[in-house]
Length: 67
Image (cartoon, rainbow, N blue to C red; front, side, top):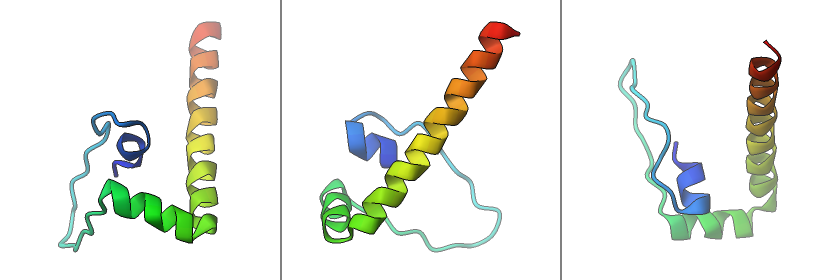
């Protein structure tokens, strides 16, 4: 939660609520960028996820405009 905010310096666009007890890990912007530098496969997976989200949003907009 918050990867968009880290990438483009905007407020988070999502909030979550856990249904069960959990442990969360807060990752600072600096750590996030260090991790994607050290683990390029992680960066690729993040890009893939963001591309899937963009495609889904584009499809929804296309449907709304045609509907």
